[in-house]
Image (cartoon, rainbow, N blue to C red; front, side, top):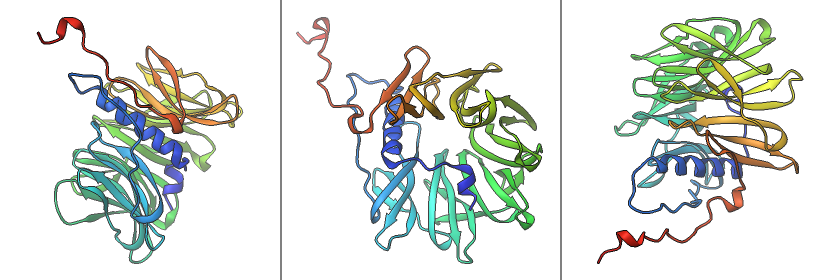
Length: 326
């Protein structure tokens, strides 16, 4: 399956913590009259025992992911004002939603023949899942979308290699660059596509950005690297291995420079998403061998969140005496 190449498995508790952080960050951009209250909400399942959220819209109106059904298989879901909705499949038994943006949800679903194909699902229209096909191989998956474009990776003819693609104007096409090995497009924002691409034989892989037919190698901290997300300011969040290829650091790429985001005391950390303010979320090992969700901000830098105590409830901020009604 392509999904194994494009997305790493993250524990459910950490996924829920990250969703909580992203919802909080997005909500913070909306003007309010009083201090907002945050907390973790259980999204439920589709009748089974487990579920995992993968993405959330800019202001938290829709969340997507995969959830277990009563028969034990996993289906893509959307969670919004009408509750948890099963998005179905492309005729097979399973599906998962990786991203939501613009007017659609995208991911991967099994077809009736057993292949795994990229799908798109309209947020506002009818008709269910749409099969976006492949680049000639037996599997593909979409990891990012915004109005008019879907990006991801597909096996090529004969399943020879994994190739980053963009789906626009009703057609899937390869990104117009080739470093000799596999490539995956992980996200798109403001027309800027980011991901990773490898040299021949996948001997070396580097984070890339792609716009207007031009690919940029974002570099690394000595090992392989991957770009996971971008914002409208062309800031990019991702992960790079050090020279030993076992230690990984989260990074921010901005204005042509790669910045190491530091540590929570452990060995490995990943930068998974970034919002319009440049806030980055991800996962990090701690000095005590735990694994925590983190939030990195330009001014605050590192903040660690334990999934069990994320955003504890607190009292409302009192009004200033000068603003009290007389």
